[in-house]
Length: 581
Image 1 (tube, rainbow, N blue to C red):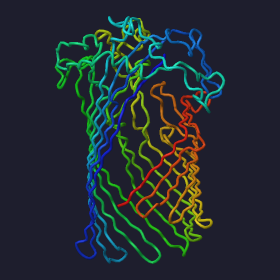
Image 2 (image 1 turned 90 degrees about the horizontal axis):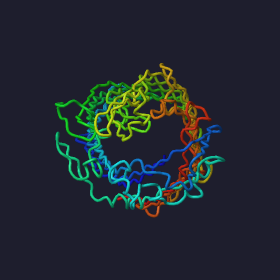
Image 3 (image 1 turned 180 degrees about the vertical axis):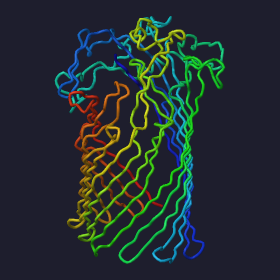
């Protein structure tokens, strides 16, 4: 099977902020800001061309590289053999927007150790809307009435969109003997031309009992709402804080508390609801209706931070506090994305709890020379929960024209015919879930020192030992993280060369592959940046990422002989101009 996906997309970002500082009287300061930001992203059209041919296959994963060979087809010449099995032209509209405002105040006081009292309120209102449209193009498929002659009088194959072989340097730095690196590709311009030849699609009539017309008869050339990936999400937060600044002989600090309320509302769509369900509308998958979910919680988050001057060049810092970190918006949205060929999928979970942690830090800082520091920190975090992918069996739709397909005939899938070429089957769906928390303890070392005449060095090392009470590997935790940078700077020019390293880490459970553990190998990169000030208001910037062209490797079960994904993203260079007014 060979999937060719042509994605035509655009993005647009807008933001506006109003900021003010007000001092109504001596000893009082207020700072207020109100702002709005919006990000629009859309896949305007995604022509999809999936071809396949029957063949035997052999593979070898030893050595960390997938070595594959086919017994009945030659990937470099297989064009007519690769018959079109599915064609679609979906569109997706994403819109994120957020309104926020906050007011901070400070009153300077002379009350024993207290030097000032800070206080404030903050409000945020974030919306995410995702609308998916499925572009059914069954007029191109061999099992429909026009399909056998859809491509110049014959069945559509890879030959109709062939675009030549993969480039000679494809998979350079990754491939080895036996790795499939040369095969026939598809030309996106040819795919787009075939789709354009179908003419404008008909829009599906979602009224219950409606008779479809034009291209929506038989879904030959029809656009309809995609209920599974479409959702709305709203998160509102309202919080306030009170903080007292303290100071004494050779010490200073603050103690405070923050209270924050979070409200989450999300709406998605359920497929195959009974007749009469409130809000139900017509869809090619059957009747669909919105399903709403909400969650609300309030957290009290105290904190304390103190610094003690042990000598002129030695400072001890102690900190303790309770923190809150909410899941990503996509994790909390109740959408579902299906992989029909495997009867698997993934989606969100609106009932997720946030991360909460009680954390403690102790840092000893030695300022051994001007602009120089050596600091050693110890940290401990008691974490309430971790979030990983959980496994669920859900009834979801499957569009298929062959009733003898193994997915239909396998009794474990419990597929039931619910319409023309439409089944409801058991899918194995991955959704994020909360599991028991645990602890994370370790230490960090920071070093900074100018060397000579504008040259200097910075270094940071972190050791992080994380564990969970449930025994689940802790996601995204590398035991060892190292950053080393050399720099040069003066009033006009600055440059930095940085080496970054993190050891292997657990990514998550792979919902598409039997929920096996997915691990990332260690990651290293060499990056550089430079800037020059042309005037007081204009500067040029240059950033280079991954200068050594490193690859990223993910593997199953932390086993190098079970490769999952190998990425080679290449070197990236960005240039820019900055203006200050």
